[in-house]
Amino acid sequence: QKVSEIIASEYYWPREALFLPEDECWVLFCFWRRQLSDGLELPSCILRLQEDFNVELPEGLLLSLAGMSFGAFCNEVLRLIQDVPSPEC
Image 1 (cartoon, helix red, strand yellow):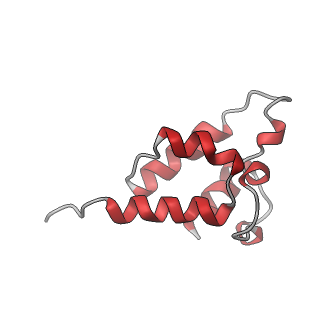
Image 2 (image 1 turned 180 degrees about the horizontal axis):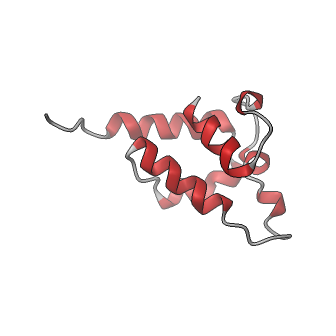
């Protein structure tokens, strides 16, 4: 849900609930539009994801993002979150 909210916010999608696991990241992250504009939506979105989930998205994941489904991307983010050790009190 949080990943959907961040993407919807950064790309001005009408509502975050429209994202399905089988949706293509090519569409959600507007890779088709990159030829038309040099927007900062993607870097901003990635930074927000990293900050909100306290993880660093590996370069390999970012390079393969355009060919992934939304569900696969969320699974990768979840895997990274689970690999991060909890801060000690």
